[in-house]
Length: 517
Image 1 (cartoon, rainbow, N blue to C red):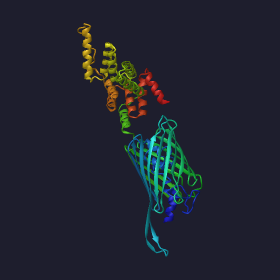
Image 2 (tube, helix red, strand yellow):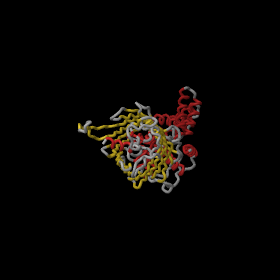
Image 3 (cartoon, one colour):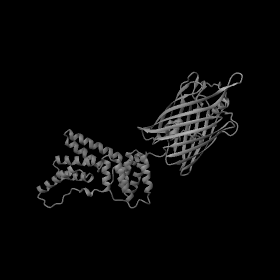
Image 4 (cartoon, rainbow, N blue to C red):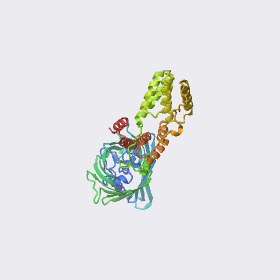
């Protein structure tokens, strides 16, 4: 029984059945059960998953793929490997800080077998359990490449023998919108008592050939056994909740397996946060692997989901946007940052008693962001200090248009205006200060965004766009909100709609073009 079970493990791990005493240049191998990688979706694609990995199971294939996990996610798998063997696997990933942390546990249950003495008399039964524990972390590479990197550490222990420690690392680089390259080194570590883990180096590419369809190609080299292998896989969404998969994995050396081997088939089902995967993988006449995996926590982050729900509720496109609105423009997110810095410089100059510099910086701030009500207020104060009363009142008016709840400024500006009119003997002149009720929904949303209340601004502009999908300024503000929440792709889409509606916005166009480079 033990011999048959060992043959299954070696076959499942990609090696031919061989006596335990066979060695290679680096010594004996341990932990062969982790050589395949876990979960069912990758196996259904022929194990061509290095550039595709994007869920919690990436910890077992390419840790860099964990960076694509945008919310808490878990996967559990069972593989009925035949001859009483069973492989169980569980992994979980969660966004932490600017990256994603993950953990996994893999267990190989050897089942039970009879124990007999030298005379053949049955003296009892035995059992065994091998396991592997892993911790990983992945992150997005800084810059505009959009690439990801990750690493993992693992401890592998066998029922008969000792334990070994290994590391894995990898990366994924998007070459274009539809083409991704990936690489990884898995289970690399020092030998212990002459034993080594099944270390492997992999390169892979993935191509999103059609909507819901992916073609993948992997090449691998065994750093322990010096064996080379290639794998090809395909995944296609055939229905909204269902995908079909197929692949082929080939060892370039003779694997001594008779019968059907190398071909894999699989299917996946998705419903909301839940997922179910199945994979079929034959190993010649020796064994057939049936993998079933359950997933939880699939889908985009909550912020992205809100945007998707809004877009589904309000279909948009060039044919549905309506007439071009005649509204002002809202600054891009980058200009807003520059405006905020100029405002802070104005405050610092004001505190230092440098009125001229404070005025200049405040003017710069409102030029970059005309909706920065604090900068307008500082500018008004500096104009007043310089003797420009009319200019001061105009600046205060702009500030109150954006933030009409500023009762202190309203009272001060009203008195200032009354004093000016009285001094000029102008009677019965209507005040120029705006009433709070005159503030438009777009101005209110912009004021909320300028004050850092991004969720409030997002909700307000979503309501505005549902009522008027042709409002270019509202689309631009929605893009700013999405950018502030980290949804760069969504922000670019909204900004592009804003430019389609109102192309006379050179600042936004320049910023969008810079992101596309």
